[in-house]
Image (cartoon, rainbow, N blue to C red; front, side, top):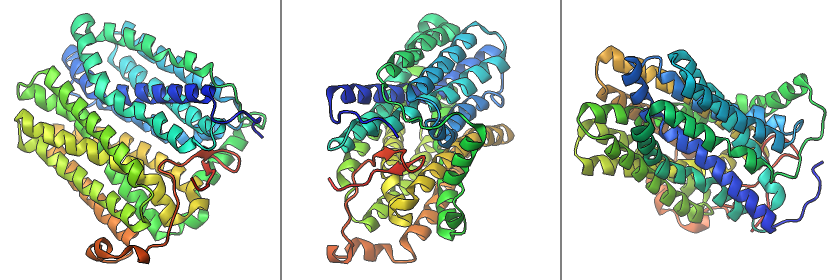
Length: 439
């Protein structure tokens, strides 16, 4: 059992700051991967088919390994896991800064940081609930704000560094920046480890979390997984292909950085809004989720149809705002559909599905772009994938009821619920077990 620690203290808020900083680095780096591909494609005269592996490995491993990392917290301290993760991020970008081999750079900027950030982000967020009680929801909200800030700031940092030092010099500076995770981990003075390291025990823990027999027999559960897979196959496309499209249409890298930052600002705004609305009725939460899918699909259409900065900015706003909604509201919706007792499995599987979507999306869309000799079909295909995901999520979440009826239904028809905007995570009973209480 984890040792007892003082709750809601100044030390806990310092841990919150480090968690937010980890998200800042993870999501910030991810938002620049399209810019990285443009530079490497120009440097190595590559068509982009091999470069698509950078995003696939980075985000695929970063999200997909979450159940494994969560299981590791039962056998190793979060401080050790975070230190190892930060070292892998440093090592990846450092080796990339010295290498002239494209396969080495792809591996070092994709796989190593992906594994590293999974170790950093997942372990720190699991540990966070040990430091808070009454102020836990607020702490968890603040801990993920760094991701939105990363989307706002990192594109400008990358563009400025690249113009001044070149791509290899930029990798070297990013390696130093990402090494700060080692300093963050010094604050993690609580260990959740309660067993000796054992490979089979880790695998059993991951299997119990991801492959719940009762959920696997549920058509609704399968539909939700399929909907999120389609969503995240398309989700990373603007970050990857918008820089390429803008370069071909004559828009500067600064404009591309600005568009990514605009999406980050709207993403932050929607997260704050959904934090205030997450305690609404379950059916309205599911309606918000469906609307966010639809809004995300519409945002993709702005990028191939318009080349004017104003309309591209509108698309970026819609994209960032919709992403903030479905990222924020997913945990409460999973509770509505499957119950609190199943959140351990549903959330773990959701992360795995997100990682799988990233692994498939970038390479598939890159091959489509090369086969069609155009970028616009990629955005149309992404919009189609998101629409199919929206249809699935509406089907499984609304249970065949008319959406208009849901909108007009008086509040007395809803069962009262009390769900905090962001759910505290505790590992006492499983990888993603929730400490559930009224606030």
